[in-house]
Image (cartoon, rainbow, N blue to C red):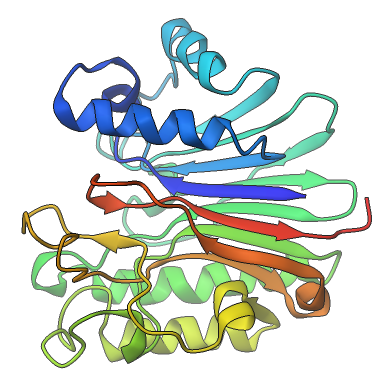
Length: 277
Protein backbone atom coordinates (compact mmCIF):
# COMPACT_ATOMS: atom_id res chain seq x y z
CA UNK A 1 0.00 0.00 0.00
CA UNK A 2 1.08 3.56 -0.70
CA UNK A 3 0.46 6.44 1.70
CA UNK A 4 1.11 10.16 1.29
CA UNK A 5 1.10 12.88 3.94
CA UNK A 6 1.31 16.62 3.37
CA UNK A 7 0.89 19.79 5.40
CA UNK A 8 -0.72 21.85 2.66
CA UNK A 9 -0.98 25.17 4.58
CA UNK A 10 -4.54 26.01 3.47
CA UNK A 11 -6.43 23.76 1.13
CA UNK A 12 -8.57 26.68 -0.02
CA UNK A 13 -5.52 28.68 -1.11
CA UNK A 14 -3.99 25.64 -2.80
CA UNK A 15 -7.15 24.79 -4.71
CA UNK A 16 -8.74 28.13 -5.58
CA UNK A 17 -6.12 30.89 -5.56
CA UNK A 18 -4.26 32.09 -8.65
CA UNK A 19 -1.23 33.37 -6.73
CA UNK A 20 2.26 32.21 -7.63
CA UNK A 21 2.38 30.13 -4.44
CA UNK A 22 -0.98 28.52 -5.22
CA UNK A 23 0.25 27.58 -8.67
CA UNK A 24 3.23 25.86 -7.07
CA UNK A 25 0.84 24.04 -4.73
CA UNK A 26 -1.30 22.96 -7.65
CA UNK A 27 1.74 21.48 -9.38
CA UNK A 28 2.41 19.47 -6.23
CA UNK A 29 -1.20 18.26 -6.17
CA UNK A 30 -0.88 17.12 -9.78
CA UNK A 31 2.28 15.25 -8.89
CA UNK A 32 0.67 13.55 -5.92
CA UNK A 33 -2.24 12.43 -8.09
CA UNK A 34 0.22 10.48 -10.20
CA UNK A 35 1.21 8.26 -7.27
CA UNK A 36 -2.22 6.61 -7.14
CA UNK A 37 -1.84 6.35 -3.37
CA UNK A 38 -4.25 4.30 -1.32
CA UNK A 39 -4.50 6.94 1.40
CA UNK A 40 -3.61 10.64 1.40
CA UNK A 41 -3.40 12.58 4.66
CA UNK A 42 -3.51 16.38 4.68
CA UNK A 43 -2.74 18.72 7.57
CA UNK A 44 -3.37 22.42 8.17
CA UNK A 45 -6.41 22.53 5.90
CA UNK A 46 -7.54 25.84 7.43
CA UNK A 47 -11.13 25.16 6.43
CA UNK A 48 -14.23 26.61 8.13
CA UNK A 49 -16.01 24.61 10.82
CA UNK A 50 -18.45 23.17 8.28
CA UNK A 51 -15.55 21.74 6.30
CA UNK A 52 -14.84 21.72 2.56
CA UNK A 53 -17.35 23.33 0.24
CA UNK A 54 -18.82 21.54 -2.76
CA UNK A 55 -16.36 23.51 -4.88
CA UNK A 56 -13.41 22.30 -2.77
CA UNK A 57 -14.57 18.69 -3.11
CA UNK A 58 -15.07 19.09 -6.86
CA UNK A 59 -11.55 20.47 -7.26
CA UNK A 60 -10.08 17.75 -5.05
CA UNK A 61 -11.81 15.12 -7.17
CA UNK A 62 -10.08 16.62 -10.19
CA UNK A 63 -6.71 15.84 -8.64
CA UNK A 64 -7.73 12.64 -6.85
CA UNK A 65 -10.63 10.89 -8.60
CA UNK A 66 -12.14 7.86 -6.91
CA UNK A 67 -11.52 8.76 -3.26
CA UNK A 68 -13.70 9.09 -0.19
CA UNK A 69 -13.00 12.12 2.00
CA UNK A 70 -13.01 12.53 5.77
CA UNK A 71 -12.21 15.86 7.39
CA UNK A 72 -11.95 17.53 10.78
CA UNK A 73 -11.96 21.30 11.15
CA UNK A 74 -11.39 23.75 13.96
CA UNK A 75 -14.64 24.52 15.79
CA UNK A 76 -15.56 26.99 18.54
CA UNK A 77 -14.19 27.82 21.03
CA UNK A 78 -11.02 27.32 18.92
CA UNK A 79 -10.05 29.87 16.29
CA UNK A 80 -11.86 29.85 12.96
CA UNK A 81 -10.05 28.57 9.88
CA UNK A 82 -7.22 27.19 12.01
CA UNK A 83 -5.30 23.90 11.81
CA UNK A 84 -7.57 21.10 10.52
CA UNK A 85 -6.93 17.66 9.01
CA UNK A 86 -8.27 15.57 6.14
CA UNK A 87 -7.91 12.00 4.87
CA UNK A 88 -8.66 10.79 1.35
CA UNK A 89 -8.86 7.04 0.84
CA UNK A 90 -9.72 4.96 -2.19
CA UNK A 91 -13.26 3.94 -2.90
CA UNK A 92 -13.56 0.25 -2.22
CA UNK A 93 -11.73 0.55 1.09
CA UNK A 94 -13.84 0.40 4.24
CA UNK A 95 -13.08 2.52 7.27
CA UNK A 96 -14.78 3.61 10.46
CA UNK A 97 -14.01 7.05 11.81
CA UNK A 98 -12.81 7.22 15.39
CA UNK A 99 -14.16 10.02 17.58
CA UNK A 100 -11.10 11.35 19.39
CA UNK A 101 -10.84 13.80 22.27
CA UNK A 102 -7.55 13.47 24.08
CA UNK A 103 -8.45 15.70 26.99
CA UNK A 104 -5.78 18.11 25.76
CA UNK A 105 -5.37 21.57 27.31
CA UNK A 106 -6.69 24.89 26.04
CA UNK A 107 -8.63 24.47 22.75
CA UNK A 108 -6.33 21.81 21.27
CA UNK A 109 -9.08 19.17 21.08
CA UNK A 110 -11.25 21.61 19.13
CA UNK A 111 -8.65 22.56 16.53
CA UNK A 112 -9.16 19.58 14.20
CA UNK A 113 -5.70 18.20 14.86
CA UNK A 114 -6.22 14.43 15.06
CA UNK A 115 -8.23 12.44 12.52
CA UNK A 116 -8.20 8.65 12.91
CA UNK A 117 -9.69 5.95 10.68
CA UNK A 118 -10.14 2.32 11.66
CA UNK A 119 -9.47 0.01 8.70
CA UNK A 120 -9.84 -3.77 8.81
CA UNK A 121 -6.18 -4.53 9.48
CA UNK A 122 -4.76 -1.28 10.85
CA UNK A 123 -5.48 2.12 12.32
CA UNK A 124 -4.50 5.22 10.38
CA UNK A 125 -3.86 8.39 12.38
CA UNK A 126 -3.33 11.80 10.78
CA UNK A 127 -1.98 14.40 13.19
CA UNK A 128 -1.10 18.08 13.11
CA UNK A 129 0.76 18.46 16.40
CA UNK A 130 0.38 21.85 18.11
CA UNK A 131 3.33 24.20 17.68
CA UNK A 132 4.88 25.51 20.89
CA UNK A 133 4.62 29.00 19.42
CA UNK A 134 6.61 32.21 19.54
CA UNK A 135 8.43 32.51 22.83
CA UNK A 136 7.47 28.88 23.57
CA UNK A 137 4.24 30.19 25.10
CA UNK A 138 2.45 26.94 24.36
CA UNK A 139 5.28 24.56 25.26
CA UNK A 140 3.72 23.33 28.50
CA UNK A 141 0.41 22.60 26.76
CA UNK A 142 2.32 20.96 23.91
CA UNK A 143 4.06 18.63 26.36
CA UNK A 144 0.68 17.55 27.72
CA UNK A 145 -0.55 16.96 24.17
CA UNK A 146 2.49 14.79 23.42
CA UNK A 147 1.82 12.61 26.47
CA UNK A 148 -1.90 12.25 25.71
CA UNK A 149 -1.24 11.50 22.04
CA UNK A 150 1.31 8.81 22.98
CA UNK A 151 -1.19 7.26 25.39
CA UNK A 152 -3.88 7.25 22.73
CA UNK A 153 -1.69 5.81 19.98
CA UNK A 154 -0.44 3.11 22.35
CA UNK A 155 -4.03 2.14 23.16
CA UNK A 156 -4.76 1.76 19.44
CA UNK A 157 -1.59 -0.27 18.99
CA UNK A 158 -2.77 -2.71 21.67
CA UNK A 159 -5.67 -3.62 19.33
CA UNK A 160 -3.97 -3.76 15.94
CA UNK A 161 -1.06 -2.14 14.04
CA UNK A 162 -0.96 1.63 13.63
CA UNK A 163 0.28 3.84 10.83
CA UNK A 164 0.55 7.41 12.12
CA UNK A 165 1.60 10.35 10.01
CA UNK A 166 1.59 14.08 9.83
CA UNK A 167 3.33 17.25 10.86
CA UNK A 168 4.70 16.42 14.32
CA UNK A 169 6.34 19.85 14.70
CA UNK A 170 9.57 18.42 16.09
CA UNK A 171 12.99 17.63 14.66
CA UNK A 172 13.97 14.61 16.71
CA UNK A 173 17.76 14.60 16.44
CA UNK A 174 20.40 17.19 15.58
CA UNK A 175 20.82 15.58 12.16
CA UNK A 176 17.15 16.38 11.47
CA UNK A 177 17.71 20.10 10.97
CA UNK A 178 20.34 22.16 9.23
CA UNK A 179 21.28 24.40 12.16
CA UNK A 180 20.82 22.57 15.46
CA UNK A 181 23.26 24.65 17.49
CA UNK A 182 21.24 27.84 17.15
CA UNK A 183 17.81 26.25 17.64
CA UNK A 184 17.89 24.49 21.00
CA UNK A 185 15.42 27.03 22.37
CA UNK A 186 13.30 27.25 19.22
CA UNK A 187 9.83 25.74 18.90
CA UNK A 188 10.24 22.32 17.35
CA UNK A 189 13.70 21.60 18.74
CA UNK A 190 13.51 22.12 22.48
CA UNK A 191 14.74 19.35 24.74
CA UNK A 192 11.19 18.89 25.99
CA UNK A 193 9.69 18.37 22.53
CA UNK A 194 12.46 16.03 21.45
CA UNK A 195 12.06 14.01 24.65
CA UNK A 196 8.33 13.79 23.97
CA UNK A 197 9.02 12.26 20.57
CA UNK A 198 11.58 9.86 22.04
CA UNK A 199 8.98 8.71 24.58
CA UNK A 200 6.39 8.25 21.82
CA UNK A 201 8.71 5.96 19.86
CA UNK A 202 9.50 4.05 23.05
CA UNK A 203 5.82 3.13 23.32
CA UNK A 204 6.26 0.78 20.35
CA UNK A 205 6.61 2.91 17.22
CA UNK A 206 9.25 3.30 14.51
CA UNK A 207 10.24 6.39 12.55
CA UNK A 208 9.98 4.74 9.12
CA UNK A 209 12.33 7.19 7.40
CA UNK A 210 15.14 6.60 9.88
CA UNK A 211 14.44 2.86 9.81
CA UNK A 212 14.95 2.76 6.03
CA UNK A 213 17.74 5.32 5.64
CA UNK A 214 19.51 5.54 8.98
CA UNK A 215 21.01 8.87 10.03
CA UNK A 216 21.32 10.71 6.72
CA UNK A 217 22.27 14.36 6.50
CA UNK A 218 20.59 17.19 4.60
CA UNK A 219 17.22 15.49 4.05
CA UNK A 220 14.35 17.65 5.29
CA UNK A 221 10.59 18.03 4.98
CA UNK A 222 10.15 21.73 5.80
CA UNK A 223 11.85 24.98 4.86
CA UNK A 224 10.67 28.21 6.49
CA UNK A 225 8.86 30.70 4.28
CA UNK A 226 10.14 33.74 6.13
CA UNK A 227 13.65 33.28 4.70
CA UNK A 228 13.37 33.31 0.92
CA UNK A 229 16.58 31.34 0.40
CA UNK A 230 15.86 28.59 2.97
CA UNK A 231 15.09 25.94 0.37
CA UNK A 232 17.74 27.08 -2.07
CA UNK A 233 20.28 26.74 0.74
CA UNK A 234 18.58 23.60 2.07
CA UNK A 235 18.30 25.16 5.50
CA UNK A 236 15.47 22.85 6.53
CA UNK A 237 13.98 20.66 9.22
CA UNK A 238 12.60 17.11 9.15
CA UNK A 239 9.39 17.46 11.15
CA UNK A 240 6.96 15.36 9.08
CA UNK A 241 6.88 11.63 9.75
CA UNK A 242 5.34 8.28 8.99
CA UNK A 243 5.44 6.20 12.16
CA UNK A 244 4.52 2.51 12.16
CA UNK A 245 3.97 0.01 14.94
CA UNK A 246 7.24 -1.75 15.69
CA UNK A 247 5.78 -5.13 14.75
CA UNK A 248 5.22 -4.05 11.13
CA UNK A 249 8.41 -2.05 10.61
CA UNK A 250 10.06 -4.82 8.61
CA UNK A 251 7.19 -4.57 6.13
CA UNK A 252 8.14 -0.97 5.22
CA UNK A 253 9.40 -0.88 1.64
CA UNK A 254 9.93 2.85 1.13
CA UNK A 255 9.82 6.01 3.21
CA UNK A 256 10.92 9.25 1.59
CA UNK A 257 10.23 12.87 0.74
CA UNK A 258 8.41 13.82 -2.44
CA UNK A 259 10.15 16.67 -4.25
CA UNK A 260 7.90 19.75 -4.24
CA UNK A 261 10.17 21.77 -6.52
CA UNK A 262 10.69 25.43 -5.62
CA UNK A 263 7.69 25.57 -3.25
CA UNK A 264 8.89 26.34 0.29
CA UNK A 265 7.16 25.22 3.49
CA UNK A 266 6.35 21.51 3.84
CA UNK A 267 7.04 18.92 1.18
CA UNK A 268 4.87 15.77 1.00
CA UNK A 269 6.19 12.49 2.38
CA UNK A 270 5.55 8.96 1.15
CA UNK A 271 5.33 5.52 2.73
CA UNK A 272 5.11 2.18 0.97
CA UNK A 273 4.41 -0.82 3.15
CA UNK A 274 3.32 -4.39 2.56
CA UNK A 275 0.44 -5.04 4.94
CA UNK A 276 -0.45 -8.31 3.29
CA UNK A 277 -3.87 -7.05 2.23
